[in-house]
Image (cartoon, rainbow, N blue to C red; front, side, top):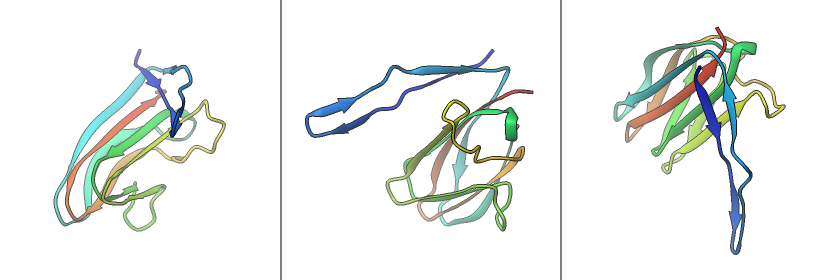
Length: 126
């Protein structure tokens, strides 16, 4: 069974807080390193994983300017927009926050000037 280990930290000058990592395990995962072309506008990337109550953990990561839209370029379930340095987004079902992906995922749409690779890691129940 796939397991995702989640580790987060916080820091400022002279102080670092690093809690003990925690693990989430379930019976399926989808992993992708999605290539995004330079000057892409709503570039479609087909990817399939469960959303809603079946989704246990989702991570998106990029080191370049990109907008990510989930399931639709016009009315997405989730939109992430990151500046030139890129960004990191993580959600899991242990946080007590609202699940950002209420529907099963079937496509990601990318808009980016420089292009690069978007890392996607999803853990879910089938």
